[in-house]
Length: 70
Ligand SMILES: [Zn+2]
Image (cartoon, rainbow, N blue to C red; front, side, top):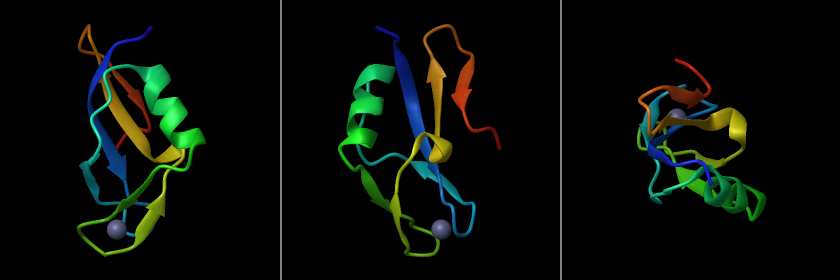
């Protein structure tokens, strides 16, 4: 299990980055939620984002970051 924190989403429409509305404690549960169809509404442009790993950013327990970079 890979521990993660501070999960954020980058909007594919306006590229705003905002906190994920659902908290995830590990990468596996984040991947499961994405496979199950995780969606989020961008607070900047109002578009509903169908999340993929290409939208996600997070921080590992050691402080390094994962996912897309900004
Ligand atoms: Zn947006």
